[in-house]
Length: 185
Image 1 (tube, rainbow, N blue to C red):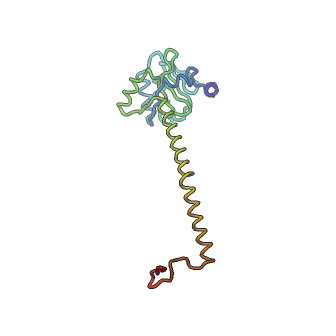
Image 2: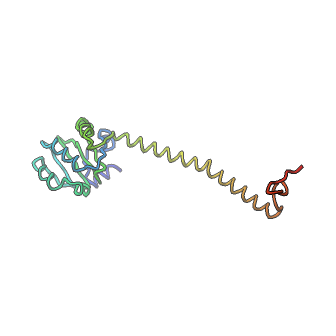
Image 3: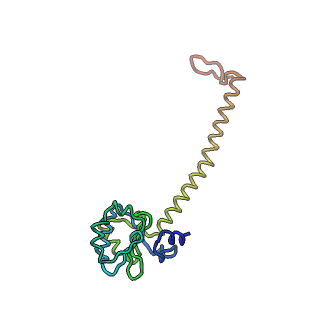
């Protein structure tokens, strides 16, 4: 499945299920600031690909001026920056899917210290997804085992009370005197 996505959407071929554990997941809304920092730090011997179009390190000033706005970045489907044939930064579909090679963790930590981004290892998202699934299953079991039977019992008692009330008359302890039921002796 992942191979079809890579072929169809032109995601760099060296990114697959096995290598995704070697990337960090980036969380930010400051896309333009993030990319400005990346372009300032990685401005030599890099290849940049934006929606299938190739750029070189000589074109970084032009990219910063023309493309590097949150509005333009959000319109972009594919971005990657690679050095020596290794993808260091990129995203697919939307910049909220931004990933960084694990080898660039010191750079990422600097950005996190500056409050530009938050990050986590990609395996952390899988664990959160598994925990969320377990939570949903437990809530479903709670509803099925506790709430549904309790509702059925209450509805059954109500039905029995209504059906007996019409046939037997008043169900109580006896006649009321001054609003209080009398006990039967």
